[in-house]
Image (cartoon, rainbow, N blue to C red; front, side, top):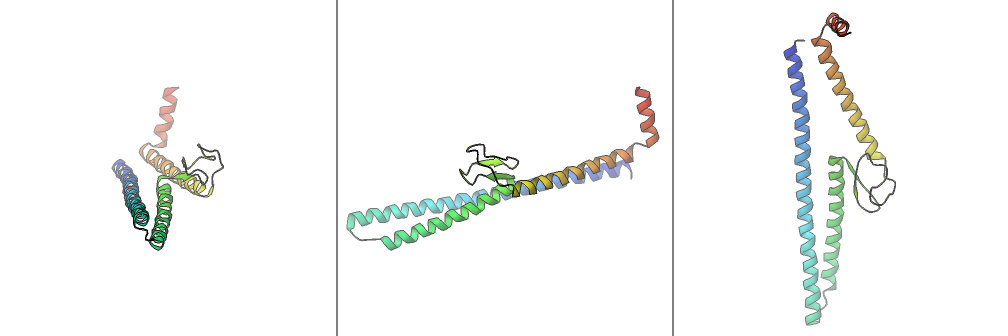
Length: 162
């Protein structure tokens, strides 16, 4: 392999990493927008409940069924937001504390806010993934060094420095 091939391979690796990060950023933005839209829908439902309660107090007409329907819709939206937050945590490689909902780095063993022990499943997955990526990067770097410098030149350089 020539030095130009090594440079091209390294550039391809950097481009792939950049594309991966850009994809993660786009995915995070999409998930955040979805969460914002659902929070806006929840606010509308709260407003609707308030209007129904006000109307019931003023006119004496009961709106219990409509209020119960709004509450059910809010609960559904809150559950969807929880799923979106879990997806955001996966993309960000963070762990949300099940006790206080604080967002911790994925390598945290205990919650930084409340101190409860955190789940290890997602953390172990990301650690394995990072180790694999790091090993691949080291292998690529070693290949570049091995192909660019002949063994005889490495020995000569090390003896000249002594």
